[in-house]
Image (cartoon, rainbow, N blue to C red; front, side, top):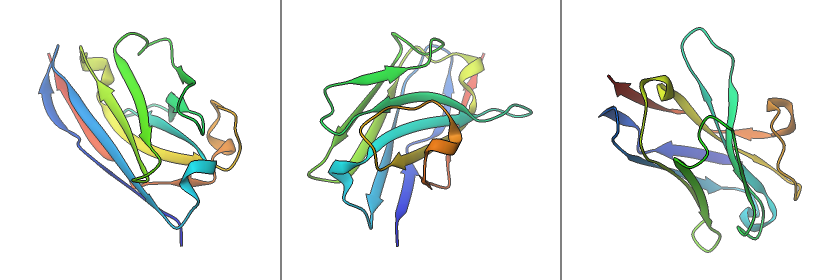
Amino acid sequence: QVRLVESGGGLVQAGGSLRLSCAASGLTFSTYVMAWFRQAPGKEREFVAGIRWSGSMSDYAESVKGRFTISRDNAKNLVYLQTDSLKPEDTAVYFCSARPYDGIIHTIKAYDYWGQGTQVTVSS
């Protein structure tokens, strides 16, 4: 019943920007913490950014602080990840995820629902 669908990925040169989006259905969106994870080739999936129910509190991985911004629109069941100043090391499949608690957790096991992912490729 729960479905998360990511979009907005693509190919961009270093220093460029992309706006990723995640559309959620089948859940009471406003009561879920939403997060973005990513997985690069040959690496494990890692936490990128998370946002609490109200949208007033966010958390980011150190590697993306100051460059990425997570936001949500509870009325539209959407969560976004604005990625600026992209680097080649940001290349990965980006996944949208959700958990029904008001706390941002960095571990994969804490999230109950996942999207299929959207590819972000940053050229040097």
